Length: 187
Image 1 (tube, rainbow, N blue to C red):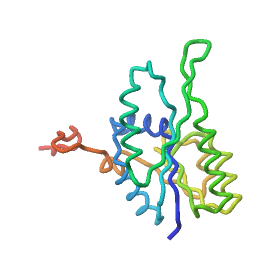
Image 2 (cartoon, one colour):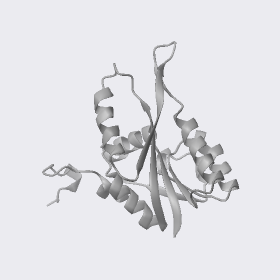
Image 3 (cartoon, rainbow, N blue to C red):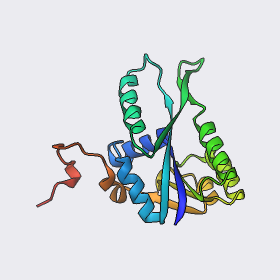
Image 4 (tube, one colour):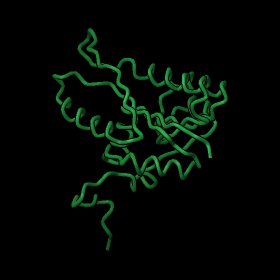
């Protein structure tokens, strides 16, 4: 069984889960186990990447709680970029893709893992995938198919496509939470 790491492009994954599952609340312990089973890997570490929101952001406190919860998982490492305000007033993530690629390259070069699973559909990560393959790392890309760059998919050794049917069981539900309407039995 290949020793592997899971690299999650947090913003990309959040948006995909919200769009296709109706919620971004994925249970990362179940997610890890599910990917291990589907791909026959031993995932020893998850690296979660996102941009830290500014303290004056509406969602700053919510994001902090989420990131703190992730940090308490034994197998999780959180790495953060920043959000900057552009001249036109729009906010933009910076240093997230760079951190993902730099970490993938470093771990591939040092032979820390036999395989990497990149959870993203972002074409900008393609050069990192090629680099890791050049150093003998088996590269998997996992994403919802509608948001998976064809260039990124072609670069990978293997592709795992998410959909609402294979991802729905991985949604985190707190005790006593009502089921989603789709989960209710029909007459």
